[in-house]
Length: 234
Image (cartoon, rainbow, N blue to C red; front, side, top):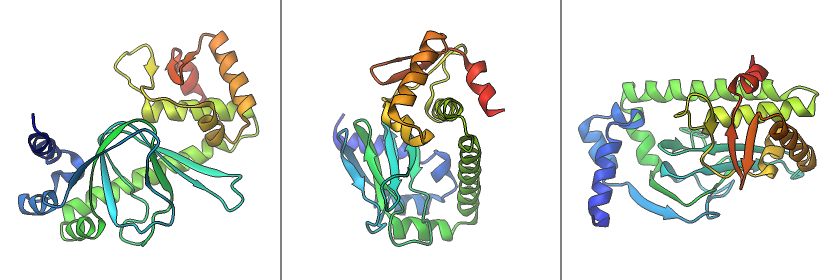
């Protein structure tokens, strides 16, 4: 299959994804002519915080990490974008610059399109606008829940809640008895999310492995006791 044939096949499949499905054929065709297929290697930066917000992305394969540090570089916002997801939602219709930086955690493949064109097509289509309204509301709800999970004094609880968050956001639930995250997650990343030291995170994961609650090898997680982890968010 040639690159052009692959691009056309992917675009045909995109037409029926929820994020694009409410566009009219004419609107989607207009957007399609301005969509560009790209591949990035692991570690490459897609954009930095403060860059002009001139592109919207749709991730086909791989994992992207979003992050933002405060002025002291002591605190960080961390989130992830998995395959078949549009990003960034932050700043849609309002901001000229990106709120955070984005880089490829794995090798990735994605489409990008001009922000101005994408926003103008949404604004002209009430059904598509409602989809994005509900999507943004869901993202806000998830972030509020995440903040509530992390506002606890116990470091161990925060770490387990962070693991539960990653399990739910990135986990593969094909197996009903256990969940694996098919992307590499480092101890440092969990430390950033939970607000704990790398040493504390490492010790907690070691104890969870000894308790047979999870496995962690080569930066890959397998959650073996779903009831245990879910109990920390109830």
